[in-house]
Structures are given as C-alpha cells and as structure tokens.
Length: 118
Image (cartoon, rainbow, N blue to C red; front, side, top):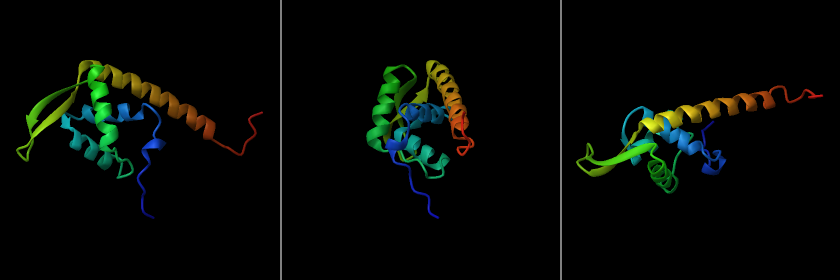
C-alpha cells in the first residue's frame, strides 16, 4: 500500500508552527531544507507547500521565535537561513506540552469506542 501525503487542511491549526520549530531545533536551515526535513522525518507523509511554509516562517520570525540571515548554500547560492531563538525554544517547549496534552486526551476519547461512556 502506497502512503499518500496528508492534505495540509488535515493538519490542526498551529501544528505547522510546532513542526517548524521542532525541525529548527536540529539546526539552522533554509526553507527548502526545512520542507525536505519535514518530509523525510515524516516518512513522506507530510509535505509542506511553499505557500504554507514561507508565511509560517515570516510569522515565526515576527514573533521572535526564529531568526533569519543570509548565507551561501552548498550550491553556492545566496539563501535565507532560519534558526531557532531562545524565545523559540521556550515556545517549542510550551507547544510540545500542549501537543502532549492533546494527544493524551485524543487517546482517551478514541480508546474503546465500542464502550458506552455512561
């Protein structure tokens, strides 16, 4: 059975921010590198489109959670590289905590769906 990429509308609102912050935790990257890392780490299930990624990166930068600067890529091209800031690390911890709570609650809600809750 072939894995199909998830539609981006299937991602919960705010999930992209968490994914980007987590990805940058592994080190500074340019936008294409971020999208490729997300794709690789998700086993090709998640593909973040440019139209979603760059607005998220700009929003995260405005919030002070990531910083960006120009650098030269391994292909000798001028690229914008993003890195996680100290504020971003704090935000990542907060977002991961919320995510853990959400997955725990979802697990409880979905456990034994045949049982009557009463």
